[in-house]
Image 1 (cartoon, rainbow, N blue to C red):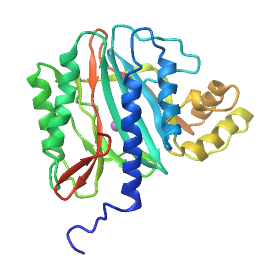
Image 2: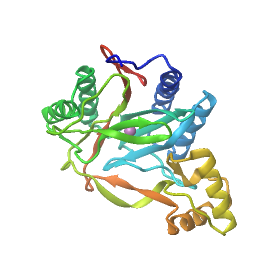
Image 3: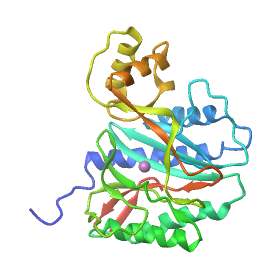
Length: 298
Ligand code: CO
C-alpha cells in the first residue's frame, strides 16, 4: 500500500464534517445564551434541541461546568440552577450516524478573562504544530508552555482523545503537558484536543454527583422502567454517554439506579479542582490531513 491510502472525501469524513458544522453553529448560539440568571437546564436543552433541528444528534449531554468543575456536570431532570458571576465551560458533542464532533468553550462571567484566554491560546498553539508525524507529547508540551506562560497550570489528568464510531473517547490520548512517550498522529486520524487551564493545582478529582451515564455491558432486568430505559439506551445511545433527563420512561432515576446496581450502566462523577479555584477549557475536533489539519468545529 502507498504511504497514505486514506480517502478524506469518504462518507466517514463527510459525516465528521457535517457533525462539526452543526456543532460550531450550536456552540456559538448556546454561548450567547449564557448570562447571569439564565437557567442551566434551559441552556442545555436549547443546545440539544438545536442539534436535532440542524440534523445531528447530541453525542453526549451538554456539559455545563461551573468554576472549580472541569467536566461531566450536566443538569438533572428538574434542575433549577441559574448562572451567576462564574466561570462556565460548555462542552458539547454532535454525531451524524455515530461519527462525532466534540467542542468546548469557556464563557467567563467571573472577571478572569486571562484564564479563559490561556486555554484558548494553548489550543491555537497546539493546532499550529499539528501535521502528520507529530508526536502527541509535543502537542502536550505546547499546551503546557502556553498555559504556564500565563501563570496558570494545565489540568494534567484530563486529556484530549481520539473519536471513534459511536465512541466518544478512543486512543490516542492527547496530553495537556509534555510527556516522553507520546503517539504519532497520521493522516486521517480524527482527534479532539482540549486544553484545560486552572489557577489551582492542575489535578481534578471525582466529586459526589453523577448525572451522565453510559452502557457498560449487555444485560437484562425485570423491572419494567429499568427494562424500558435499557431498551432506549441500547437503541438510541448505544455506547455514547446520556443523561437521566433523556430517558423517556417514568421513574427514570429509579430505573437508572437499578441498571447501575446491576453493573449494566456506569456513571461519570463530576470532575473538579479544589473549591475556590477556577477551570477554563477550550476544545476543537480536527482531522489530520496531508499538510496539517482541518478543524471541523471551527
Ligand atoms: Co472531548
